[in-house]
Image: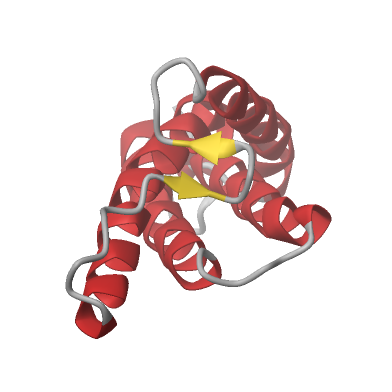
Length: 134
């Protein structure tokens, strides 16, 4: 049961975060607002994935940065064709291996917290109505 929850969590949170990064990139957002929404989405990723949240949240963040970069670049190039590819979101989030270490650790922490909540809030397959206990 853990793998389907992990895959769906990564898929859902990647899409949500990618559009968040792409649509907020050209706007001047205050830092708390710019990073609070992704933190909540990553927490939700952990809730969906359960104990696999420690994997789901960083994977979602990484995939969303790449997908968000593509979407933001397409949006920019639709209006100004000479625009360079987007490689940063806000002042601190840059798509470079060394710069991604701290955000990935923060995403893992959000995933652990969300997974802790998800294991207590969401039923396991054995607890569904009509399932036999083993």
